[in-house]
Image 1 (tube, helix red, strand yellow):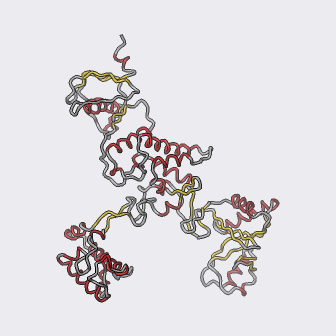
Image 2 (cartoon, helix red, strand yellow):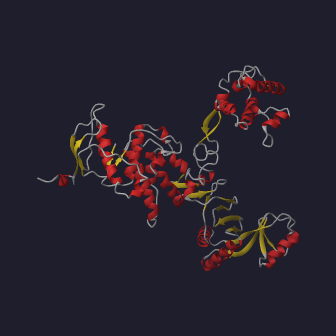
Image 3 (cartoon, helix red, strand yellow):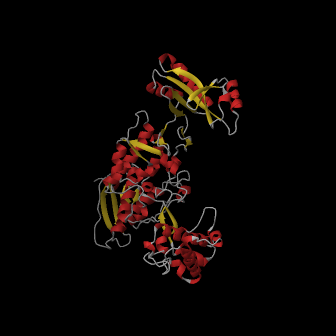
Length: 514
């Protein structure tokens, strides 16, 4: 007969389990199989699965660490059992939602967001937020290739910008360029010699010096590259290629810069694509997607009331009645109908009641002192300056609510993050677009993403994302989006999300207790 130790190579052997209400249970569980424990409430299902099997597997695993390391890990009590053999390290996944922070989302729990913030800097393409042109970090070779492809056999001017400070005398400026060896400039869509300064009365902020005039063909290729290198050097990474007959300008830059809008963008980095990092978090909501502020629906719950009937609730009690009198007085001065239901007032009058006569350079108190109406918002701004008083904080809490962040519209990211987009199938997707997409659709989309065979590191990142997304689909969560707050999930959904995290780690010889 084989010994118990030999049996334990392919199974978990439990003898004399007496934890809680278990009555000396003996049980053999084969490894690498699903086992379901069923029974009525109070029969000991959790005592066997969690308090005995999981507790012993976790306890033995933790004991393999040094005493110094064990002090940072949760210690499990040894279960009441005569013997357990062949038990692997155990992971328990609860069917409960204990998450309360609003920063936790499906993407953060499954670590997909961590992989996305590595994928985006590698594959996302930059676009100018103003003109929506793609921002390409050029090199002299790439510029020369683009010029040869689009302007072959045409004569072009290779130019670079020279700043001209306001009030600069054209004669002095042109004399300076001439001393530097530049005899011609491109100004007002024509070529002007630097020795004809008297013909130019006023200089723009940027004057384009002509580095070279070249006919684009194969014999002039090395000359073209050399002229481009020199122009980029003098132009601090920017140059223009100008064609004649007809006149066209092509702008190039070697940095994260739109040469058409003269706009710099922040270089991509993993932190820029994380709402838990100051680089990427929206400054308005600090990455939460929501802000707490005054809810006008609470301040004016019944807009069928008129101003005279008390449409503004906080103005109807205690000392705040003075504000109601201010509103009535200023409304009569403005000839606003104080007996008309608020919802029927002209839009301009409604905005005036809410925002008053506030200006960026005046506070609500200054508007009041000047005889103007400070508005409902101005009133609450003034109250905000007195929150050191307990009763003011209590008062304001009645009218506060969490609302969608007006700056990021709930995406949680800075505008700089939205400058980078994945281009898949001719469509552009920002990171919030990907995170707001159903998991099932996102998995199919990223599977179509083309990555160069030589870029194995990026392929590993992509495969990890697709693998975790596929796990979510397989456990029936394909309808969720990565930006779904964890606190809004049911206990069963949280359990399956946690299972995806564990399976995504590709653990082997591990016992999962669900």
